[in-house]
Length: 306
Image (cartoon, rainbow, N blue to C red):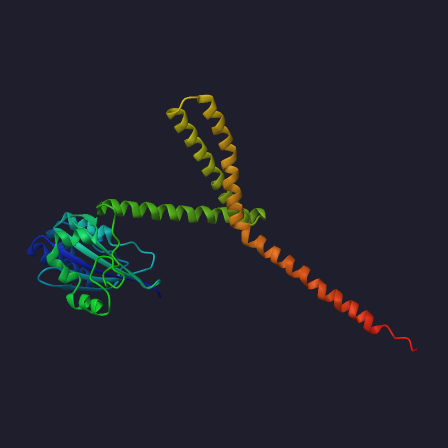
């Protein structure tokens, strides 16, 4: 079964917070929720579910003088541990580095967090250069360099060049909300398609045709929105309101038709090409049969004796 493997480095503001979080996670990994809750209360977290998802498995907890290391696996569709990070940043966590290996696609990505925000790899090590040797061990970095790669940010041969960086720092809480919203929208879209397929199945219509209709309707709506936006902008910026209204009306007809035809060609283009190829092959295949028939007639015609 495919799974996602998480490795989470946690750096706390002081040794007391580090030790308290260590006890919380060690008791959680041992399924001793009573002791885990006792130490979570000392950390300031009243809800254990905010620190540990019950769906995590293969848990491992280890501690070093500088940080806490958590390793665990999740399902391929489970969320990143953003809720735990959000709670920990409120209660003594200073920075964190998360590495996720996606077994289903064989890819790895790393995310860097500082002061409750998702930051770029470059910004993280500019603020915490002392932790680079911890999260990017020198031996592995030298190995990558000896293999012909450089130690630059984002180099293809860099073992740690798989960092996913934001354009600008983003709060962990905002990340979690956006991820939850995307998940909700995906579930709603999937459920809507299932309901549509069931309704069409009952009426005897093909769900595929229904999906094509939705795509064509979306394409038409896209063209209509662009035409409306063009009309509003030109009326506000330029003189001649009736000219731009007329042009906007033309675009409101032409653009939806253009996008619908483009979408239709994208959907049916391969089928049309296959039909043309089949017709061409069929047309080319008749000639040999005709010649063969003609040859057969000639061969079967007896010659007259002279």
